Each structure stands twice: as structure tokens, then as C-alpha cells.
Image (cartoon, rainbow, N blue to C red; front, side, top):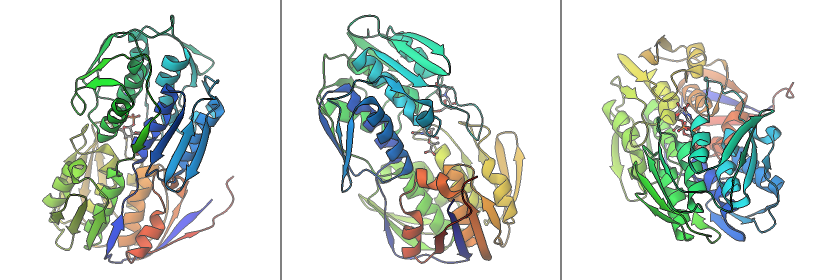
Length: 423
Ligand code: EPZ
């Protein structure tokens, strides 16, 4: 099991290119099941999660080929309807095949995702959405078994009780081929959902209200295979902005959509960072980052929960008391104990973390618990005095492409070293 060996503190300089967005490409890959033919998805990051989704599609009978930064997905041979536990347990997003399979194949058998490091992550809204479209949904032996009564699902209206990226995407994909009209209220507005909807429209779907909380879908009989280039990963970009802030460095982050990072930029500006924004690049000057910050996670365009851990790492070295409040996953604080091991002063108070800035962190062995927590530990390790060893970095390989190489090119002292074999 690989680890990262980090020597700190260091400063960074230069520029870094951001990869395609993990959370945009996963639903796009599932959406290729809505047509029969060859889809091409460009700017696909080479990640453990994109490979897992590829395996799910291959299990169903699709052919998935990588050509440079593109994925060619041929769905003409899809006959399967089952997404097996073995794959779904490694990646919750496998549940994205539920809507497309149900709508296109008439049946779907998808393993229920297992537990998560930070508490319950139900899929009840996904299932309610399929039922709203007329499907019969049952749970059997740890699987969701959904059936489409007739030749097509039937349009309807759903008002999501909670804004959910996954449920919005899944129900949207199912509704595209349904008979009649569907309205989704309190739909998620995340850029990844908007990209999915735009790609479906480009393939012949009829969707209005993209980017708003009200999506209106007129069902069509069929759509064409997808041709799409994945948007930049706003969370990877935000992680590099936090690297510049915690390391008091100046950096240029390229191949980004600044509009997707508004709330993250606001929070980093509030602690003293300054920015130069271009159409597809962000230059951050983190040398003056010193004031405490406050952040409350919210659905897009609010401050993303996927930036909470990295921003907490920044707060550990800011003067005064910073408060980070988590409203999306109230228990998403598994990184706190590990940051404390590096000398951070953090107290949990309900769904808030109260961070008292310290003058210096010091290196130590730490353990990654999930994707964004591992990014936070790397940032803190780069700022800490001495050696930090980050264990279980398979978490970070799920969502960051070659992060240690990108950081090393910016001047970080970080290397991937082999660890003891997985138990
Ligand atoms: C997506 O997860 C992202 N994952 C997550 O990023 C991200 O943290 C999350 O959205 C929120 O922004 C992918 O895109 C693959 P949700 P998702 O459904 O779709 C509740 C990362 O680090 N809910 O928007 O699973 C849920 O419990 C990952 O890249 C229900 O109650 O999140 C949560 O409190 C981690 N019932 C809230 O909604 C449901 O059926 C938002 O979850 C579904 C969700």
C-alpha cells in the first residue's frame, strides 16, 4: 500500500494544469447507457474512480477504451442490468447506472452502496425519483431491483427534500427517455449536473432550466451517443489554491472555470489571499494569508463540502479562531484527529470545527480516511516542520491525477513510496 513521504515546510511557485472533473465524468460515463452506439468523452482524468466506472460499464456489456485523454464507450453490446456489490462497494457513484439502465433496458439491479467514513449517505431520493417515474422498486439481498412497467417510464414531478447531486443526476438521466413531461424541483445546481444536462441536450434530449433549481424535461424516444469534453475539476483547483494559502506561496492554476470557484475564492480572500482571475486561469498570492476564516458548507453556488477539509488545513496556521461548519455531512470530520497529530488545535462543537491557529505544525505519520481528508493531510504535511508520512493514499488516487508529481513540479518535497502490503 503506497504512502506519501513529505518533507516540510516548503514554498511553491509556478503554474499547474487542472484535470477533468471526477464528479462530472462519472455521471457522463453512466449516461452513455441511454443510447446504443459509440460515445466519446474527452479530458477524462485517469483516476481509480473512472477506471471503476469503466469496469461497471464493461460488466454490463459495454466496451470501454482509452485513447489519450479520451474514453471511447461503445454501448451497442450492453445486455446486462446488474451493477455488482464488488464494484459498488468501492465507489458509491456506481449507483449512477440505476436511472439509465432502468430507462433504457427496463430493469436495473444495483447493489446498495455500503457505509461511508462520515456517516449515513442514503440513496432514498434516487429511489423515490425512480418511483415517481413509474418504476417498481424493491430491495432484495442488498440490491435495489427496479422495473419499468411498460415500454417507457412516465414523466412526473419531484420536489427533492434535500438538494442532492447524485439523485438529481440519476433521475434526470431516467427522465430523458420517459414518456411525457418531468419537473424536478430543488434540483442540484452543481456544475457537474449542468454539464450532464448540457451533454444530454447536445445528444437530443429536451431539458430546460439547466443551472437552476427547477429542471424541466420533455421525454424523447431516443438520444444519440455522447460527444463531450469534461469540465475542469473545481475541487482539484480549489485544493491547489489552498496549497498556495497554507504555504504562503504565489501560484497560477490553469485550465479552470473561475465561475465554479466563487465561494472558495471568497473564503481564501477573507483570510488575506489575493487573486488575479483570467477566463481560464486563477493566479493566487497566498503570501499575506494570516487572518482567521469562517466557512459554512452549502450546495452550489455555496462553499463546497469537498473543500472543507483542505480549508481546515489552511485555518490551522492562521492567526485567531476559524470556524468551519458542515451542513451537508455533519460528521465529515475524520481528518480532524489526524490534523491534531500534526500539532493543529481543533475542537469539534456539533457540526462545527473551531480551529485555533498555531505558529507551526510538525511532521508525523498520519492516515488518510477519505479522498478530501487525504488532500488536507498532504497540504498540512507540506507546511509542517520535518517529515510527514501519509498512509492509505489509495484514497487520494480515487480523485486526484498524479497529485504528487504536480506538487513536486511546483517545488514540493513529496514522493510516493511503497508501503507494507495491504492486509
Ligand atoms: C456528490 O455526492 C459528490 N460525489 C460528493 O463528492 C460531494 O461531497 C456531494 O455530491 C455533495 O456536494 C460525486 O459527485 C461522485 P448528495 P452525492 O446526494 O451525490 C443527502 C468527493 O469528495 N441525500 O448531493 O452522494 C446526503 O446524505 C465526493 O468527490 C439523501 O438524504 O451527494 C447529503 O447529506 C465525496 N438522500 C446530501 O443529501 C439521497 O438519496 C447531499 O448529498 C441522496 C442524498
